[in-house]
Amino acid sequence: MSIETLKTAFAEMSECSNWSLQLLKISTSKTAGTKYASRQIQLEPASEMVSFISEISKKYLSRGKGSLDSYTDIVDYDGTASGTTIYKLDKENTLIASEYDAFLTEIANPDVEADPFAYTSAYVLKGIIPIADDEIPVKMVSMQSPITKLKQKFQLLHPSGRFSQITHPILTLRTSVDVVIIGDTIYFLTLAGENLFNMARAYKAVCHDAITEIEGTGIISSVDEFRVIAESGHNPRKFVSFDRERLNALKNTNTREAMAKRFSIPLDGENRFDTSADGAADKIVKLLCNKGMVDPFKMLLSKLVGQSNGSSEVNVCL
Image (cartoon, rainbow, N blue to C red; front, side, top):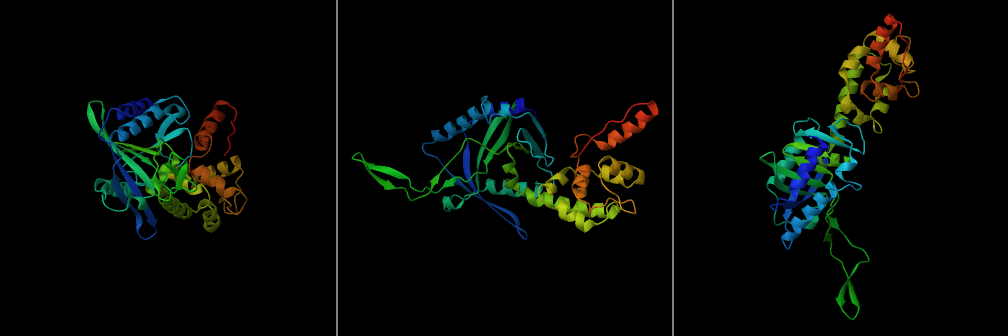
């Protein structure tokens, strides 16, 4: 789906009058995974819901900050973090598949009696819109808490000027959303959407498995030193785009020596990447996870071809 097609979907949202609103409670644990609970609520008068959806539609179809025009493209989720990119995932993507199923199951059967103020994680708007002659279910999720506890806020009691403090929580809805689900395709308008599916857990698992795979190739000097760096900071999310073809290529001693020379990664006495050297582990992560400015492996191939044709070398960096 292109940004223009997404604009069409937002335009149709304001034409749909059958929207529902649910508050979400999301809990995570290492043992139980990600759990969802939802509470359906109603706005009074009912026309307020239609007006709210229209405001959301207007915001994203405008030309101001935060509109769809502020994005440059839609790409498959790859672990990068561009503020001008909309990231797309299919429901079967292994990073979110189990959480997505649990999420859908819960919002299909929301609670209607529990204390709504206990649902403070997020909220979801559900509707059905026409796209290309089909009726498509749409969900919009805001990962900002819908419940606000006011401090030092007062309401007017009497025209004479008497005010009383507001002590109870209130419902706060915003026109910005983090996730849009059209059919079974998930779009992250912001990376806060990752929290809906606890994706930090998923890409840490992907990172762990990749490091084990790297260890098995014997191309690095110390897996323990490499693991400390690879599993820290923003590195785990980079492994979403881990490239096994590059890993296999690095099993070749000549390729490994060429990459070590190009990116100043020292080798030990056994021609393995020396992961004890400063910055070496980060460079290896970038090399294996497509995070260089250009593909150095294609550059290496081009260099070999170029040398046979008398061409000069082109330098790249990580």
